[in-house]
Image (cartoon, rainbow over all chains, first blue to last red; front, side, top):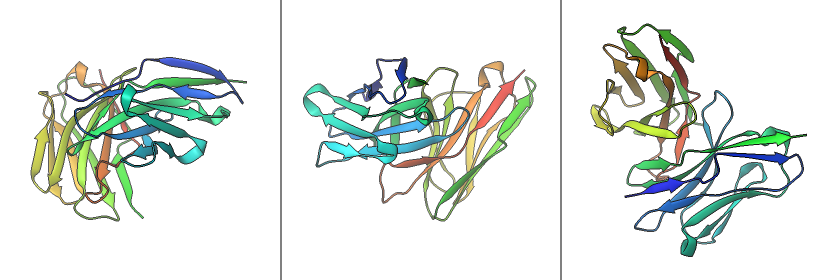
Length: 111
Length: 113
């Protein structure tokens, strides 16, 4: 069965510092992988996706993610965090018509 | 461009009352449609999805039902709400060509008291 694990429930980072959010997945076939971001009380916005090809994918808002098949991971990174990046981040794996989401990581940005 | 609308944004309902949440998509045709629930501090749980008019698949047994009376309309309903139905409900659509890429509405915050 497919599943997604986000080991970090909450991360606090200083503005301007780098950020890395971890995501591990379990899926029998080649995965479709996604990162979404959710601001408080809002819907989810797609940051980036991986289907195939280059394992380093670029997304919106300066985010990137790297697919590592050997580690079943799809970690999200940003070199320099802005205060507006404070939000909840969800990793997801796609299969059939559906997405399976991780529990999310809340990012707090301190000045 | 495509847009997705959900309403209402916020709803407070007494236990035992009925529920109807609506979701509509514009700018596309024949989308796959989804209802998710997000409980506080938890991830998203897929409740229902639909690949066409009148075609509804339920992912979890529950007090809720869904209907798709028109191609771009998806409705979440309940005859009698329970306290446990409280949460944040999100509708999403997927372009069948752009497989697995889902786009979300702004959500409905439901409080059952």
